[in-house]
Image (cartoon, helix red, strand yellow):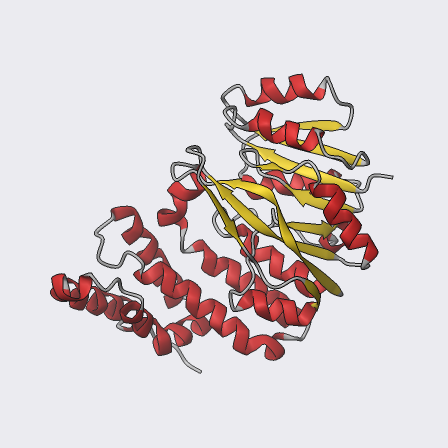
Length: 334
């Protein structure tokens, strides 16, 4: 029986992929499969993973045309046979005892999902340990609320997830930034009980030049689409009213991050993302109502203090622009 399927999407990560795959191969838990989805890499990534696959029969390589991270993960999920799924990005790596320790905890406590702490590394050897919630067993509704209000991360790679939770669930492939937000909360609400381990096993390699970080300023608005995936799911299962308060906190916090973290920067990519948010809001009544009540407040509240005196006129113009674009032309009926 395959206990854990490790799914590794890989796109142009030849600098990191061997370390990543070897960390999977060297797991102390033997009953695993390693699914590497080569998402149309144009560097030597394919050559490296095919060489490693010849040395370990547990490795399955899937080569596909480039479709993005969500597409690659979906392919891996669809072919996985393990009882649980562990996501592992091609530039990250995991400790040798990761699968064994987390799987044992999941089985001993009959858990659908296990969350761990996170270790952030960079190429210069800097390490940062990030603690999630306190250890223990949580009911899914409680953990879902904690996730919506930001007390637990929505990333997929610090979680061991029971494969059956993915039944009828795919990661939205039209969302290339914030895709974890669109699906992890749904998997949480589908669970019965969730465990939190006071340990970290995955090393997330932070690279400010990576595709994900480089596209953040351009595609930041897509996190709003991810929020709507959660809302739609809750409506479909008839539970939106139960979590409306927490959902509103999630939505407003995401709007605030997009519209004001660099509100005075003049960065063209960032301005593009803000305008995309504006256009989205203008075409969604529920989003428009939420921002109408809270959007401008967040712009001022989270504005870096250093700008208050040096850029007061620019701030006024930014707020005026935001109000005009969002509220000035929007016509709607209740």
